[in-house]
Length: 180
Image (tube, rainbow, N blue to C red; front, side, top):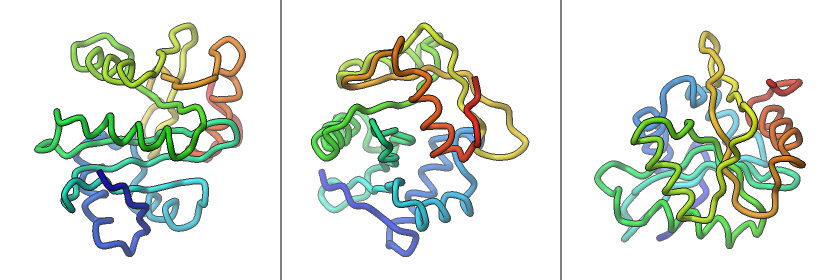
């Protein structure tokens, strides 16, 4: 697998935008104008295309924050799913950053959500279950989304939750104070 950081002038940036629209509902992604601005102007944000045999297969967007990396979006194109590419992307990120990783998931209520949590658990992530976590809506007109956090590495829910929430909400979502 090859992972390439993109800017908005990169040839496959439009493919990343298309996969974002297909894989994530509006409340879980920025609009295209906001996404382009973030890609071009925030050095903490990394927009990456995933390739296998020179074919675009997915995306990995993340934020390099003070004590951890926030994995904002990971998506594999439907025709490439089930081949271990998501796991390969996460392993690359672990090696690349050498920092704890944090991501948001839907609570494991239904089958799809349970499978997603198990996927991340197989990749070394732990589900934080004690506290309510609200994902701020990316776009106006949408409500916050109740989610859970999953963590890979040396972070502890009892000790680090407030700082993790604050850094994600103020950096990735641009809030002045985090949602509680």
